[in-house]
Length: 249
Image 1 (cartoon, helix red, strand yellow):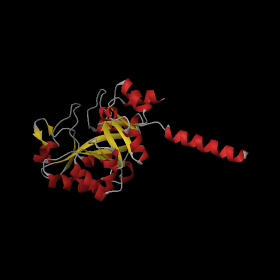
Image 2 (tube, rainbow, N blue to C red; image 1 turned 45 degrees about the vertical axis):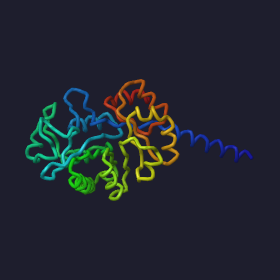
Image 3 (cartoon, rainbow, N blue to C red; image 1 turned 180 degrees about the vertical axis):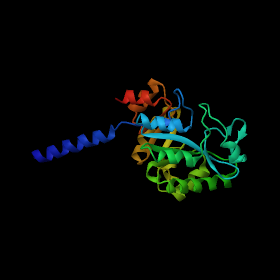
Image 4 (cartoon, rainbow, N blue to C red; image 1 turned 120 degrees about the horizontal axis):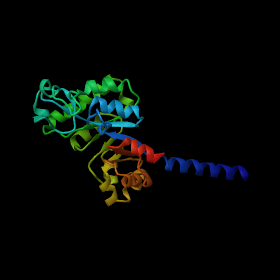
């Protein structure tokens, strides 16, 4: 009888530990809100790794001549990325003076680090172009030996469906669909803005009950960070990773 009670108590303890696991910290566009850094820059990637963030989120586009580049907006210094050649795009400077990086440059640096990668495929105007981008991205990540460290997110349903067909890696959808819908279309998790979860307070539990992960963005305010911690987020995507790390301690 005593052994049975000890076993039950042990299982309860392990279940509590798993349920109360701390969220992982994702640096939104890298750790850019510091001197010498910039969004989606190589410096932002390296800095996120240096403070031991769990992951670095970044954004990828395909240029007119089919080169993969890293940038958040669809334009850089007035040039639309998907309709401009890479010669022009890759010569544009970021706010810290770095040149806008190609995905290959970004991944080459990531290979030297330990941080995981959250790669966002941006919605392209040209659907065929976007579909091609998905395959090129997956091929390049595999070529660089970074498959096991890379997960994928997107707002594009087309890119999402292509990812579901082409990879077994985690795929989190950015559009705030209901948990059962997300499960049915093949997602492995929800990567939604904090306001979506606040409007649907039951979704986090529903997602977990379905075996899906929860990533909440973009959370940099102390009260919102605490809300994510208290409500069981698996990942917190933030512009202030050091604050999140401090609060988790």
